[in-house]
Image (cartoon, rainbow, N blue to C red; front, side):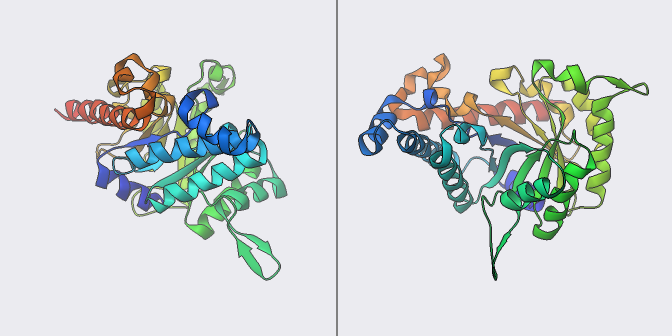
Length: 310
């Protein structure tokens, strides 16, 4: 699957991923009203609204992007109907040829971790048959319970040729409370990065590993260090746009081949119509606003990478 992601990036020339993280407040009033007219102001109504919202954005951006990253919590808050919308979103995006990174941040041990891995990336046995539950192409994994929590995902990735992105240095302000703590003279995130590189060396695609890392755009100097520690790991970079990251800050997350990183923007794209820059589109054309935000993001990052080569 890492080979497919890279092929998609090369085809679109867009090393970006759209975070499909739909808070109900992002969904325009006309979309909500239509959903509530059919299902009432219920969990089913909310799930229908976010599904229609996602579909409109994907329809307007799928030809420009290689991948999407739905954050499962935004769907879980609407209970079982929300999870149904999550799975429907995944299937729809895959039907458009997009790679899907399930942002699930799972991290547990033993049979629990194995169940998470099977449910999201693998196949569950039901009698004589097997089924793919949420069938994402990649998933995000929290490694802070150690190898016991990661190994079941590695096993499934090996079987299914899928991938994971392991949290190494996250973009949130308080990440340093633990991730930056010094351990034998080195920050903890560097030691996690070394484990990612080790795990990934046993699960290689053509040029990059099935085992990637999450490193926040808000910490470019740390990204530079981690890029060297994990040369064959793809880096998923959250924190662009709304959290302050810009193209010029992200150059060192990439390798010299122009690959090696994929940058996420969530509300900066899906709620673009709420920004002053894109207000002229109006809520009725939120999909077009998202498309323009994608084009602007691609230009920003591609321009920064080109400038770095010069």
